[in-house]
Image (cartoon, rainbow, N blue to C red; front, side, top):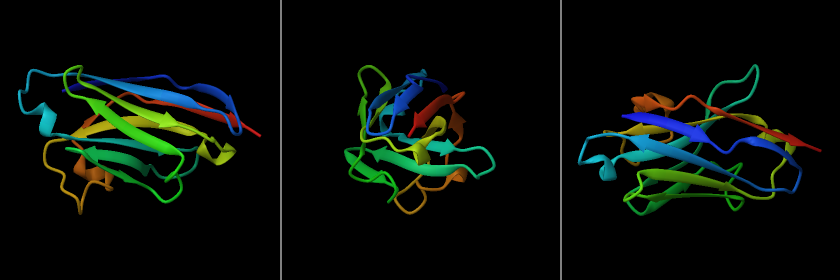
Length: 125
């Protein structure tokens, strides 16, 4: 499984960005994988942002109501729509995939075996 994240950039507070994660894989069960987005700001640990498992979505409290995760299994693509951005959303954003994560573990980075390279999001005040 190879993941390629894109769509990062600069935005003003209150603005929007849409991240994409393209997935290359020959695994026919990929549609059952949990897909997640994590972020890491300078000097901070990587933190969970959002995940999608089958049709269910999960969010951190800090982004709930502002970010939306979605996927298209036919296109092997996952998106993270980020609205009402705040300066504290500034970070390097990673997409990740897991064939083993379950509801109780999908918020943990250690549950994901596959990672994209990260895309930078910078929000100015």
